[in-house]
Length: 78
Image (cartoon, one colour):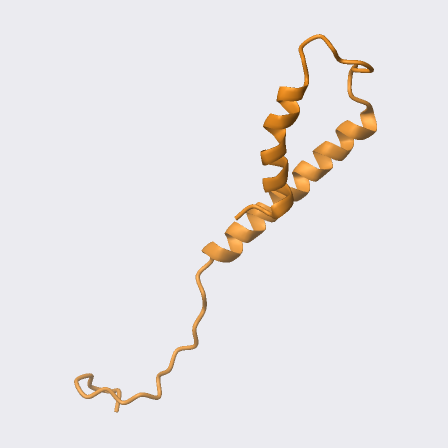
């Protein structure tokens, strides 16, 4: 399940694209280095968060074994 900020971004993205007309970009240019570093760091954090959630959900749970039960049809157990 995506966080609400991601859903809001995905909902507003088509609106932003529809409002921009091709060739009318004032002040556009190559992105600055701090912005690129910030985007890469945010991508890394989100990727690591996804990997951690998948790992926690996928790893087998260890349940304590209970050998103090008495089994009727198992010789040597009771």
